[in-house]
Image (cartoon, rainbow, N blue to C red):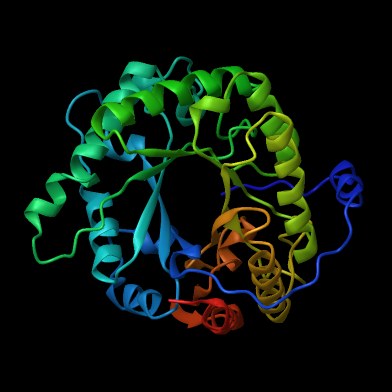
Length: 354
């Protein structure tokens, strides 16, 4: 997870819109989700109790990275075991899964830039089709685990933040990303005619990145737009959605939904981990409440289909501020609940209709 502080030009663009006010709203259960990564997907960590807590939190969905180099480091056998655990754990709690397919194994890249290399399309197609055969409507996982109520994966997010060179080495990114996206959608549809494709989450000047995707001919390559609206104020999150909506309307795409596949404010205020939108633990909880209420109030008007908090469980260590973004945290070897967890649970309960 990497995000770059919002620049002055972003703040200037946000000023084009007036502040939105929260209003009573009701959202479906699967509207609110959470990312599972880090300690939650570490095979050496027992996280059964975390899945219990997550299942009781009010979240209806999880987003998880299906990192291609982990499953297929060499061309040949694909080992999906690490992802089986996520899908089964989520299904056991009645949660859906949005996989984020990203990362290029060295053998499958078109350059020597490692996991950020644009992949060879035929290699990616093979991986995606293996995923559908495992987790799709007639996936082998469900046949092997009849004790679990089936929650087949029908929607896939293709890549993460390709407008950043740490995730997509070929910049400007739009033309090569759109070509890959078309190939990915075609591969998914060959295995599951009803498969949906969510655009990679776009951070920073997300509306201009979206515009470049449209200009590269990407309109028919995806079914939903995804944003990572990292910014200082909850009200600016809604404004970023409006900026994206303006681009969608300009290119005749107003009927598609918008997914916020990452939303967060790391609680690193007072530390040396500064990214431009950090806050305190109490501030994190306040901003989470405010943002969810604002987004719920605009859900229908802006066609906001789903919102994922980043992240469920994080470790307070290392150089990244996002180690302090979790609703649950690993602190000094112990797991604790951040104040934001209560805000997440209470706000979700207040907003939700079942």
